[in-house]
Length: 267
Length: 260
Image 1 (cartoon, chains in turn blue, purple):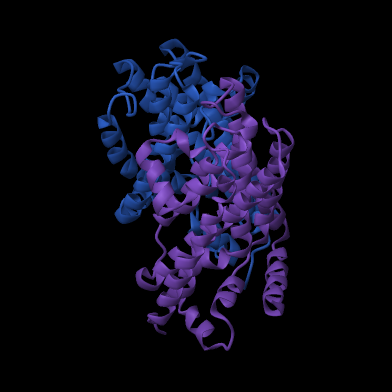
Image 2 (cartoon, helix red, strand yellow):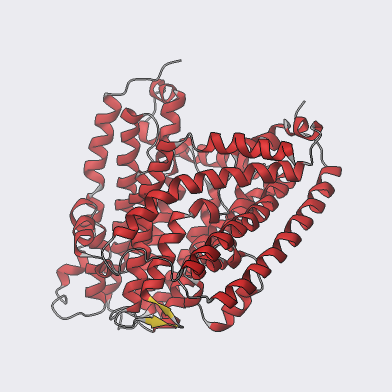
């Protein structure tokens, strides 16, 4: 476990160095959050709730999405890892006495965590001050706040496990653009990035419940706003843990399988 | 023209080298706008209407915006990634060649995977035309065509204008995406749903309004907007290219190389 914690520490420290990039990102996230809220609010019109999802919950949902974008987005990528695969330098990685799946998992996890933590604070603080009806509401209860933090972190871990499949696929395709895009779109839609999942038709919501994507973003955000109650939230966390066993297991198997057939690029 | 075609062929061949990724990316480029349209359709299913607009009205705007954007992504891509030419000093090489500068920048990069977006937006566009909530007339057809052309003009002007910025900033600015990607996301819906301040900004600073809400009023026969003049309002979008071209020329004249 020690080396993985070391990887976590260095990547985390590296991640929080890029403050200017974070500021530019934050400006973009404010803008898009605000556009989405304007669109959805226009659809709500005079209605205050749809499918039990209130306008205030919707607003909070969107701001949380923007604040924790680095936790959610599947198209976020580690260019140096991808470059290593393309150029063949990955051979050095394979020589290390570490499990490569766990090594990369730790790496991506810490990058996302540092980038997310850096960006979420200003967005959360500022949007909480926005005038009523347009800003972030406080968590429903102290318990939902606590469950939110737990489910958000578990969600990030699931998301990292899903991202690993992208990197595994690059061993086959060599160029990351395609698989990143496909994973990114599918993931975004099914995690509520296009429209919040409570606004989807019921049949579609039932499909979404069987996929891991909603448990990375949609679920924690709804726990926060109280759209998902305590009992249901605990059950959801159980499902999150289930995915957390399943996805890395498959990922690890798949990676080892790919590596056996791997031809290293370059000389 | 022949030169541009040569550039095109080379880009196409080089991109086909990574075959699996090429097709996956094209599929992805089809899916990106598809998913965003699916989201729009699902919202209309849930809520019925958006203010006074129906799905087919808004789909028309979606088609106009996406078509205009897709066209730019296909052919004006060189301006989008222009800052990389400046950073690497590659731009110096273009300067010494005895060919038109704009043409060379256009040829510096082309991305065929963006074809996916073009196909998808055409499908939605045709669907929206066939299912329009109003009667088509000849003048309305003209108006719609002008909306697409005007939109192309605005996006092209934005890409070109921001490319010029990188003469001074050297590195590309992420904030620029607010206008291009952000403008695209916003203009898929009638701009009237946004707060007044934003409407004004997108009328006078970046004239999306003239290819969006204003002609839509004309198309859907909103009282007070029946005059034929509104059919030609989208032409203003094309005028945006004029200042962009002058700014670009000014930038080229004041260019200082990054060296090496």
